[in-house]
Length: 398
Image 1 (tube, rainbow, N blue to C red):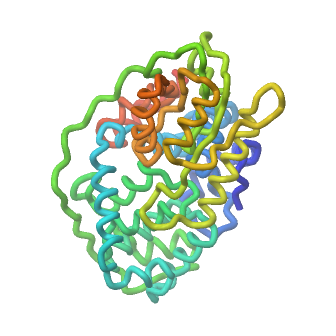
Image 2 (tube, rainbow, N blue to C red; image 1 turned 135 degrees about the vertical axis):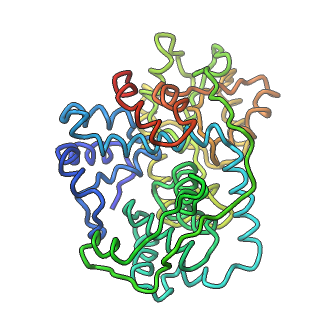
């Protein structure tokens, strides 16, 4: 269903652009099954930045006005907003990780195994669970219904539902997935929940599903408060770039050309390029074979595109432990390893482990943040609606 290459992502973008205006606004909430033309299907490519948000918005606004394509452009910015919000509140992610680890290490709650296997007896829920496992994708509206039924009808911990999604969604990322589940449960916008209803599901699946027995109320969950938000650091490039530089791409950002352009005219000559990924870091439990395969394919595609002038692909590092990266840097006699900035999530955790080991070897780990993120993330300090007001300004500044 999704070919894990940049050319496939660009082809999907080209195919969707004509439908990004009025057609998308009218039909976007309908889910008619896996064969969809009313949504873009670009999220797996955006999640790994095989295709960038800026490229997508540019292509759409070359064809449509911002007014005409407003709903689709907002959807692209939702992913950016979630990342910026979590960037300022990393403890939300850390607590979620601890809670998932504890829940999976304990006796699983009644109903969990049936829910993930598609055996709840709720026909819609079971079909969606199977679709997720078999395709690695669910329509956004379905994700909301699924989460609502999971939390309020089945009474299961939201953290386990978020983990189920993160292990199976090709486009699953720390921010969008975690915070969307929190929003449904009434934690993200405190006290405001999302309740799935038979009427809404029947309407937007055009009668394919009309589940009965759903919860009729959705009481918001509660939690201990978090620390105050942390400001976004202003520096786009963190660290001193030396003279013997290597580029290390990772599974949060696999498009090197536009990344290096963010450095301006002083782009260093690269001695070595490598690509590394660890899809399994998403969860203490096993991620799906589809997620593993998509990530592996995306890494291979990035390595081919980031190869040297000799035509050889970049190095795909065989392991994900710190020593693998250190050995690669040593073999190239590097004094600097450039990496795309990784937002809060598993990749950032790995880079935080890597940095002191490299530094002890005299090698700097220098992060490069894209201007798209630097412009938008500071506006994600509150809810999406204040952020949304900034979209015209952010689009003009792209």
